[in-house]
Amino acid sequence: MKVEQWGLRVPARQGEAMRQLLIREGSLDASLKVLREGSDLILPLMGPRESAGRYEFEAQPGKESLPRHELVGGIAILQEDDPAGAVKILASRPSLHTVVFAKGEVSGEYRTRELTILAGDPTTRTQVTEHGHRFMVDLAGAYFSARLSTERQRILEQVQEGETVLDMFAGVGPFAVTLAAKAAFVIAVDLNPEAIGLMLRNLQLNRIRNVLPVLADARRLPAILPWKSDRVVMNLPLAGTDFLPDAFRLCKRGGMIHFYSLVSAEGEHTARIEELGGKVVCEHEVRSYAPGQWHAVYDVRTG
Ligand code: SAM
Image (cartoon, rainbow, N blue to C red; front, side, top):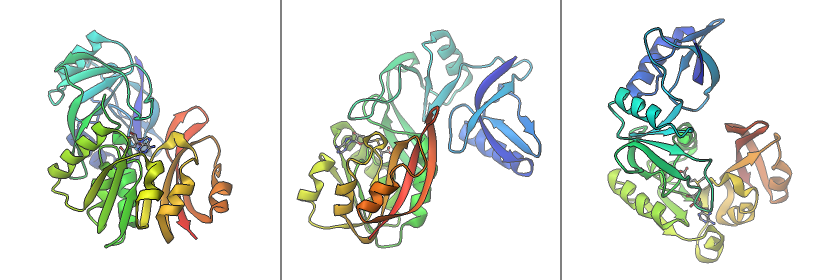
């Protein structure tokens, strides 16, 4: 039987090391066979991940295939309302405490999803470990995406010791907590009180003392923030370029803005960025969203 699932393409010589890493993370789908394509291996995953794509795998003989799902901490998220499948997932994965059904994509101002609990503990709260940091998340109450973990590390590599950072749409604080390791100070803003509550918990969990959580509408920041930052993170992909002028006001000259946006063409926002006095130093796809649409990040040097 062929099963369509997420897969990670790696050169065959790196296959075993990556397979072991995925097993340790609990993200290898052991019910499916590894695929070989030329000199590459494609390792079957339990859910989406940076650089992953969709592939057709053969089921492992004797192993019952599980319904397609995504893992966030101790919760499995199904795209189908499949209570029997949920029970199977829970039984086959001792690290999970809950299986939920997500009715659609994230929506609304807070970018949350409508979830129904299918099996396990009646909670949408769970703890996620990411690059040595721990995050308490509530999948129904505030946005969190494990798919952005590589992106957070990419930005961390660019941060210079002593920088000031502004995260305009900080959620439960994953960028803020990650960047606080190198930055002198991070201001982390969100409109959702539940996100800010979880962020405080995450600052405690990770012993962070240089992040200022702010419960506010980012639109108010230019009026209330008395200083400009070296770096601004703008992770609200559906807002298009609405907040870009504010980000330029809040960033020092020669600073950097990381602007995330849902796009359907390369360079879609370049003209607007240049009009505001910025220079795109890098643009790349963060993840695909729908056919012909993807989340892109623009790294923008302010003029
Ligand atoms: N950066 C976080 C992360 O990676 O997990 C969260 C990103 S999420 C896509 C966008 C966040 O922006 C949500 O937590 C939402 O509550 C917040 N938000 C939406 N509109 C806002 C606004 N006008 N001002 C401040 N925060 C806002």
